[in-house]
Length: 157
Ligand SMILES: [Zn+2]
Image 1 (spheres, rainbow, N blue to C red):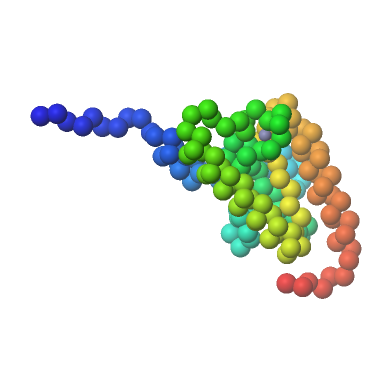
Image 2: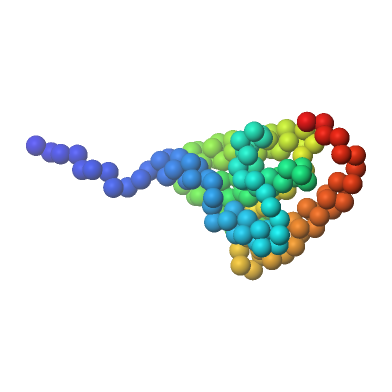
């Protein structure tokens, strides 16, 4: 009697699901968090009360950071090697990844409409050769927001 061999290979669909589930605390995100923490910034993580559950949240600065994997979130920079689509099963990947990118755009505009500043850091901007300038830029963006906090102390919500 023939027996069906146990599946040892994970299908692309299944591994895609698994990778999506594991989207939190990715290496690029940890690199960014570590660098910002070392620079003295304090933040919350994965705030579920905000659209898209931003990875890093600076409540007092009303700023959030998303650290996006270039492939999963379709980094549109033509120089990004990580965002290239696989050659096979394009009919599977393209709609899935396009849906991710559409969701990102929607979350970004929801946040902006609510008065949040949204910073997106891409995975390819967190490599050993790129992270330094990424963090420098991010610090600049975070710091130019603090200068506005001398404004009246009344909180709207
Ligand atoms: Zn990229």
